[in-house]
Amino acid sequence: MRMPDEDIVPTYTYLVTSLREKKIAYLHVIQPRISASDDTEIGANDSDEFVRALWADLPYIAAGGFARATALERTEAHKNELICFGRYFISNVSIPRSLPICWS
Image: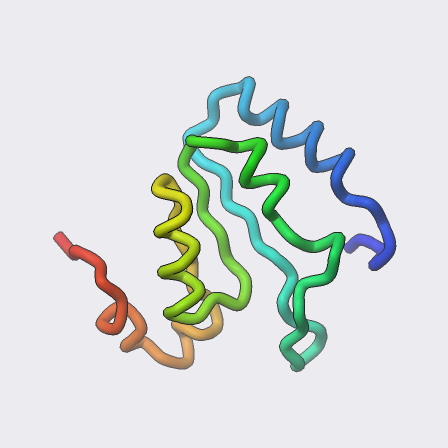
């Protein structure tokens, strides 16, 4: 667990750059969107945008508070990105039917 005011950019910049150099298959990032049982907005130090920029065109999986509209926006902006639904999927298993996904 990290402290709320901790600057995550230097640490995660080093980590993501090192992982990119090792040519791993993908990166899965979860943005904090919940505090106890309440939803929260992402804070200034919580955004994954800098991580997404470092990872560039490699496969990227993002999770954390996405709804249908925000998931579609994000995947349109970044072609090599997947959105992961956790607790919303568990409580609403019909989510895949509402997204324009090709299932094979």
